[in-house]
Image (cartoon, rainbow, N blue to C red; front, side, top):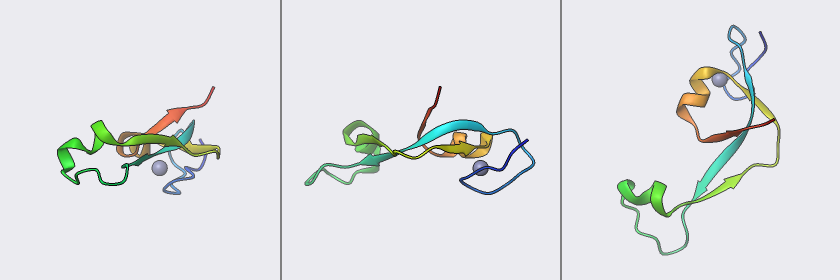
Length: 64
Ligand SMILES: [Zn+2]
């Protein structure tokens, strides 16, 4: 077991990930239904280790 770098819990197995931010282009409509479609995914250049809960809740990519 190890500590989740996102929420800090240390009682669950974590997986090596990188956080992904979804960035809306300027002028895009803010309709929540279209955000995932329009947003550009930006992968953060920082290694993190996340528990299953955080991997469920936040966009990310797995590190190999
Ligand atoms: Zn977590």
